[in-house]
Image (tube, rainbow, N blue to C red; front, side, top):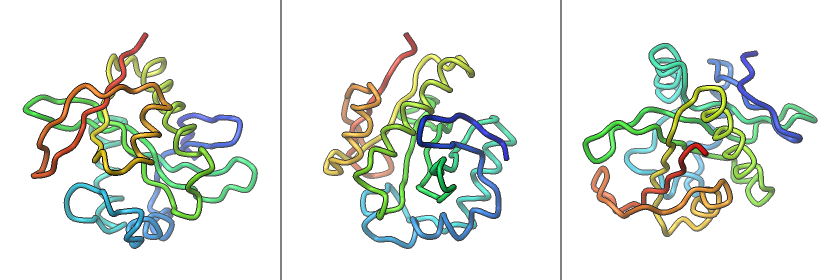
Length: 166
């Protein structure tokens, strides 16, 4: 497995086609996808997109698993994204609903930011968040991100949260 990073509780690794069924658990859950901008993807197209990001940019969404038992918790990662006419590196996270409330998303987000800053030397990471999604806002702020502005992105009002490498 292509390990990206680890924490005390988490193993973050590159996605493979074997992750299809695990990803489908997220994409087929209306609660998990309620605030997702745009059409809800299916696991196959998401895997194709992610693997293409690995090929093109050597970054993308990564699988987050529990270190103790290897169970799939969700995904967190960074992807180049055109936002308001410029390319930014955006961090995203989507977790299995049954795992919400355990701090896994915040822990994974902090680990991915450390990897982005210290290993990849990316100077700035952003997240686009529908502010009605309090859980997502909480993950971003716990990871040290701050709201910079509000904007219209893909016909939705979102807030842009950002953090800069120290």
